[in-house]
Length: 244
Image 1 (spheres, rainbow, N blue to C red):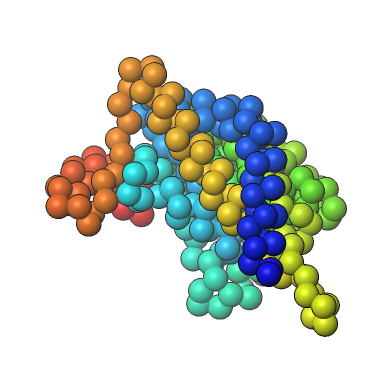
Image 2: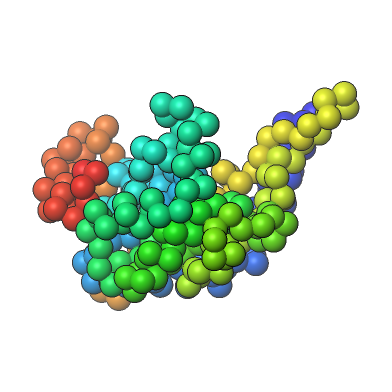
């Protein structure tokens, strides 16, 4: 059955990614830990469905408090999904948006784009580099190398980032086929990407603790003590993280 085949494909891709990207994940975590230990922020950014990866590590039970998800409405799937596709191809917008964000050179940013080709993510990476913010890219080399850049510089996300973590999905993402259908279906990049995001956070927290720094971590608001703990964090970080 195809659900079983999907499981086997994901398992194989995930194992490959875990083994081959260990060093890159470690480098990413070291950068993120430096931001946290300098009392600054890890920003997270993506367009369309890739906004999910930013959401996964922002304001999250068990997640680091100093994370700022750049959830730009113009790049979201609502109110009109097709508009996010148009917007992510427009140059200049991401740089203008970043001017409104509290940043400094001790920050880091995780940018997720499986294709790595669209203007919005490349603009954001370039804008961050201009501000000496370390850029971590989650992208699929297999996918990205098979398409052309949509940025006037000719660059792709992987060309700009300080650290590149290769998401081991296939070009086009979808992996299943069924006789009579003619179109592949069910992508794997979300599973692989979410695992990677949490892997970075796991190692980031560990590095902080190993260096004698206790990072602030959200507690589930559905635990009895959660609201009381979290409101102290929100009070402290609201001036840094506007979305709080």
